[in-house]
Length: 200
Length: 200
Image (tube, rainbow over all chains, first blue to last red):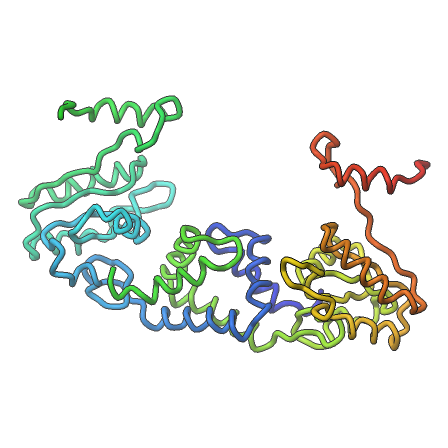
């Protein structure tokens, strides 16, 4: 298969996307090549449109086609509450759950020695500026329930403690539908420690 | 998330690619959006290059950047043997196995009542023309070992029987590493019926 470099390069590029490997990348590329004028064309066009429009929100670092993003500029949402998340994926997950109607702040990761993420790599100056100037009343720490996420939550709490804010942390516990027998000990410990009075 | 249509459209397009769903498509799009000037740009460029170059081989219907394709125009390969496969994916699988050094003919599917694939939908006229004019000596029927593939193999054998060709069919049997206990009865029957004398 000499000279087949363009197709092989394309497969190789797809195979490096998250969740894909050689085999799945080959299937996708073959699918696209079956009707290049439709499938390849549509994908190229959609990617190009997205590339030309995508911007990072100057307030919360969300990805959107406008800045400030649709969430930061939506005045039907509570602009006095900020939920702090690690990534855009976390923001999307929150939005899918339809549980929160305020704004977000995307840190861009969590403190981590192994990934060399240091305090200066988090987008904290902008967060502090927003808290000071935008009449923010509550900050919800929604970093992951991992060691890195917990460390980051504690660190941010320290940074914000002198501001006049109600700071909360999302709960850890048994996931809905979870069976105790299959839950790890750390989660069980967290669930026990966070137990609440049970009443109707 | 009003107005987020471009990103959502892109996710929706990815989610329709083979093997992907909503969740995996979201992960991929988020990954691309993290560094649009690098990741989106590279993917668009590679897709565009492929789209501009891809052609269907006029001889065997392979997808390549030249026609006749690299296999049909490679005179170090045995141009007197044709392996008949259902799809380009099957050709790629054969090439990965490095077991065959002749040429191919891609049918574009197999006879199937449920998929409405009729004899006229197979690329047989070109195959017969190749057999008649290109001094072909052997044809190997490598359609799938499914009912459709078997039917198609028998049908093609009928079509070719008046030509002066050695026609063979790839073997069915226990896959290498397979355990009898886990093999279906059809495969066991095929393996028994195709048994060969065992000698050193």
